[in-house]
Image 1 (cartoon, rainbow, N blue to C red):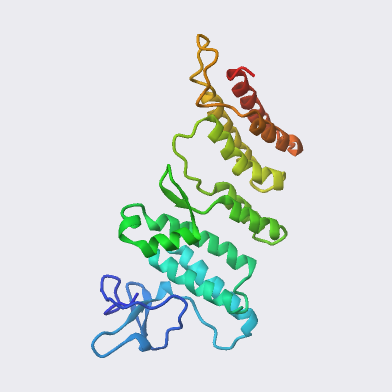
Image 2: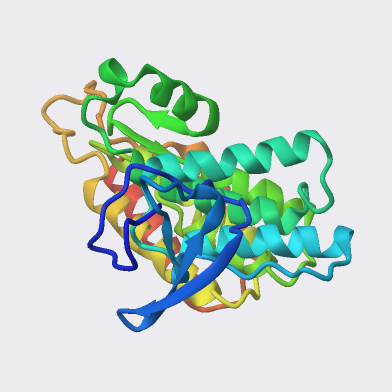
Length: 291
């Protein structure tokens, strides 16, 4: 954003677009940081100072194919590091990246840039909010439909973990692949009124995907611990509403045999003893449901 003078307390209606180089002839040190005077955004009636920490350095002497990718990686990483990004800023940057990909700009389709974009979409989902967007902001709604998934019950937009796993599966040997796997395992999946069958499905969608691909991964212990936590929750609520006096009643918190079998089968290649907690809770859940 532009500022009327070098202070974050100043206000301006102008914007500096994400990914545009700032042409500057002077700087100012204020509030412990450097500010840049943006010549091309400044008029006699309204000047434009840009907050230095929200910029990233551009290199004048370039290897175009190599440095274009590096520059965009720096821009996205810079945006991810900020804590005050508005939803529209994420849309702005994503538009630039999409446009670059369509014209095959060097590096615009790199796997690492796709990984950072998924993280950016995660933040955009959180920044979108819930109140009033459907009725009062149809263009915002259109963008969300195009880029995210929506959980009707929890009323939340989110990036499904499968997108991270698809990227991991295509690039398992990249230096950032482990981080992508961990983000997939940690990704937020909105749920509401989640009973035992739903909880077991969460195990399949997240921790199981990690330990199946990375049985000796850097986060295998944390992943198994989360699997055990979810398995315990499934066991605690398994068929809680069954009553021996009504043997024909169908539980609203079932333990699907196929899901339990899938989880058990996925643990056969795991050597960590922590897996025993998961197996024990699965057996407890089955027992409560009379299996």
